[in-house]
Length: 148
Image (cartoon, rainbow, N blue to C red; front, top):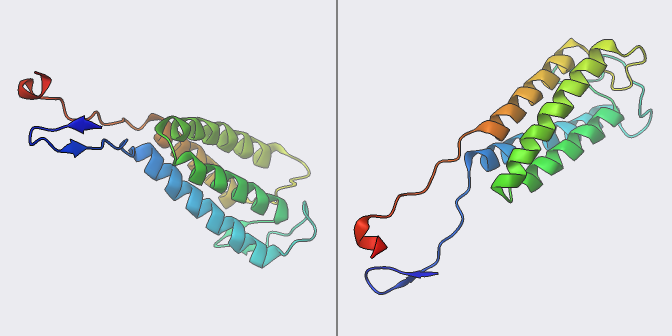
């Protein structure tokens, strides 16, 4: 709390950063994608699936749906702090690159990934970069009258 020039007490609230907003957006989209995936796949055959089981062109199975839900929940939770959002972005980069590498090189393909899904993993990695490294705008500098 601080006392302003008019003699009123003002409560300073921490500002929400762009990274926090982006982590919330990515989190909500991933949760929606995971829930929609369960409508397509159901809850059996966790690592099975055919490329006909798709949500807007992305092949899914129950394991990939759970992965999307977990990543989405972490994104929503990361919105609670600027530092958490940055760490979520870094985590999303690592997971996106790992999932891209796995879906392109795995023989068993337990995630039922097709090429659009692999591309989505790269988009997630890029979104993580944006979340992690989006500049945090500094607050207004105090004037000399406010310093005294």
